[in-house]
Amino acid sequence: MSDRRLRLIGDPVLRKRARELTPDEIRTAGIQSLIDEMIEIKRRADGAGIAANQVGEALRIAIAEVEGVNPRYPYKPEIPLTVIINPEIEALDSETFVNNEGCLSVPDLRGNLPRQVNIRLRYLDRDGVAHSEVKHGLTAGTFQHEVDHLDGILFLDRVVDRSTLATWDEFERHQKEEFTTRITDFVERVGS
Ligand code: ZN
Image (cartoon, rainbow, N blue to C red):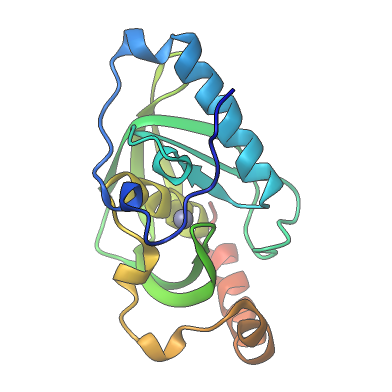
């Protein structure tokens, strides 16, 4: 039995740089069941993604998935279940946008931060197969958030204007309408 549970801000594992996995390691039963548990914990919490250090393992594995309308982020385009191992992100240009993010490891807080609009994402999937894909907009933002976790970085570290920090209720009350309008236009323009 594993005691894997969601780790919250203040747990030192969230501030560690997670380590790379070897192709042999990826195929082990231990890593495959860790991936299954991460998927389950992410889905139970309605997250858009999860990184291995968020469940206590400082390994470079993360997951992104947005199925239908996510209750936490209803404006996010869908992302099919994607397991990324040893991911690398390359910005394709200097264009950035202001995103509003939250995090399963930072309960009840959201805030605005800049993200790259266009990225190339390289990673191994759970079978060890290499992928190289271009991502845009909010989807690119989700992958940047997850790869940040693997480097010990939380979204809070990137919040420039701290006056945008809000609880989920206050975001709903004061920021959601304006943000949703802006970000919906943006998603239409840049795609995912
Ligand atoms: Zn997070």
